[in-house]
Amino acid sequence: MRVVVDPDTCAVTGGCVFHAPEVFRLGDDGMLHLLREFPDESLRAAVQKAADYCPTGAISIED
Ligand code: SF4
Image 1: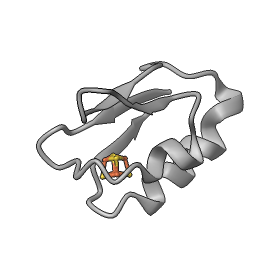
Image 2: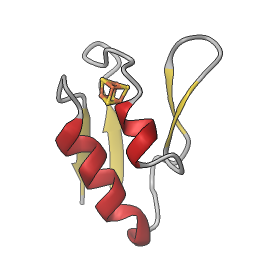
Image 3: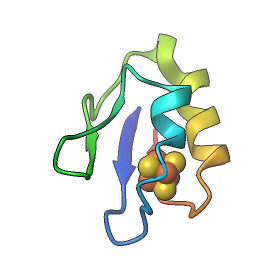
Image 4: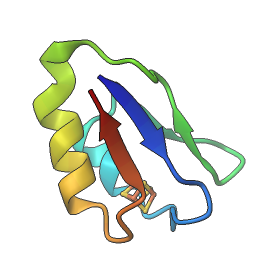
């Protein structure tokens, strides 16, 4: 599983950080940071939820 965030689409709402803090983090620079581009399968449900609830559809999951 590969996680991709489109920085041009992300509105930095922080929703994904709430659902999957192991993968996403809001930086001090006010930008969203991807902590793990290739998260473990055990995080798939959390990452999927983050993608599903992202208000701008910025998160993609590639298998
Ligand atoms: S939920 Fe979507 S819009 Fe919000 S910070 Fe995450 S990727 Fe960006």
